[in-house]
Amino acid sequence: MQDLGEIHYILGLEIDFHEEYAFICQSRYVFSMLRKFNMQNCKDIDTPMEQHVKDPIKVDERSFEDITLYRSFIGSLIWLTITRPDLSYCVHKLMQFMQDPKIQHWKMAKRVLRYVSSTQDYGLLYKNEDLTIVGYSDSDFASDKMDRKSINAYTIFLGGNLVSWLSKKQDTISLSSCEAEYKALTTTTKELLWIKRLIMELKCIKDDDLPLIKCDNISAQALAKNPIFHAKNKHIEVAHHFVREKLIGGEINLEHIDTSSCIADLLTKPLCKSVFSKHRSNLGLISRSMLDPHKIHF
Image (cartoon, rainbow, N blue to C red):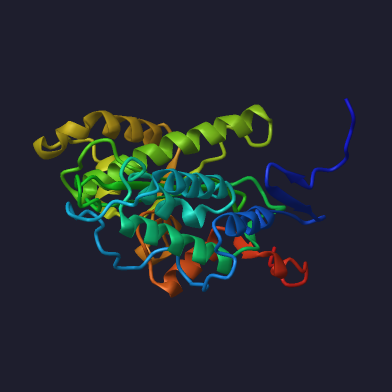
């Protein structure tokens, strides 16, 4: 074995180290993607998806002829989401049409790459902070117009640094926004507790350090704290008891936040430019050109 020193490039990941931060991006990988799909001269755009995107589900919509090209395109974008959580929702959406992509899906995919081109040197910033664990939970109720399933999303921060995120369609249909949010809360709780136990095994935090979950749905929080179960929500009793057990046992804490402050909202739906940019910044995604230590707030 040979010690090659501090890592700087591996599997398309570029890692910059500094005394006070580490920065991970995939700018070289993006450049090779643009060349591979002949889009190095494409027109840049500010968001990966239109805010009010038209539903690409027309039965008579013409299929995209080169399915292999579409799958290769989406596969390349999937690898890019390792350092680009801002792409998670749109890539998750496009993945659903791998078997039979339409012309409109191909246009949507190319729009994503146009956005990637405009943010080619963006990556995740990891700063020297404490090890407080904070999670943001969110859901977009019945957002999929094909099957009316809701989208689960969470972002989990360790010391202000993004360490885990998810954008995924729920397995079953939710009958209310409260139920959809509660399912998302359950998923967030499980991931957050797993991260806490991992950090505890590394002797970095104590057992009494209470993780915090921030949610913008008052009904879901009330359901977690309410010991009385009503007939209309008995079908989510198992999820209810799991979250409530962790809440009463002092393993997690719940806090209500305004929807505009819920960072996980970025992973549930297309947003306008201003809100998208705000949440992208809150995720710790910045341009490499901003890495001057005097410009970064610690």
